[in-house]
Image (tube, rainbow, N blue to C red; front, top):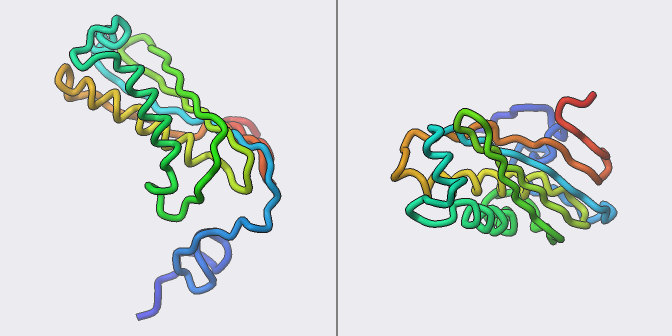
Amino acid sequence: MPARRISKPGSLTHLDSRGRASMVDVGAKPQTAREALAEATLRMKPETLKLIVSGRAKKGDVLAVARVAGILAAKRTSELIPLCHQVPLHSVGIEFFPQKAGALRIQARACCSGQTGVEMEALTAAAVAALTVYDMLKAAERGIEIHGIRLLEKRGGKTGPWKRGAR
């Protein structure tokens, strides 16, 4: 049976002319400075957020461990996402923003100079940092929810800058 096409050949960069998964060839692309910012939000009870902010969680410093986990995840993105290129990261930063009513916003920024973007690295860092917060707090609250893993902005490359909400 022939492969089912989900789009016209060539309209999706990770499909070849026959509709099969393919890694994009970035060999001819110029190296440029690239940066991406992504976020994830966790929703929890206000008392659970207080455990994080006060540093009284039973498993230790939740934010320090989540920061390291996010950075490590960004460095290993190409091992987790099948068609993702290995990117020589210059830096990865993770910031935490406690919100009112029991929410924690996580922002991850990834930077490199390369032939392909770092959006996947920033998204992976935000997601894994959020998962780590959940793991460290699940004994206190199993109902923590992770929401809104999304790209906020990116710079560099052929398509130039992009910012969520900007037109």
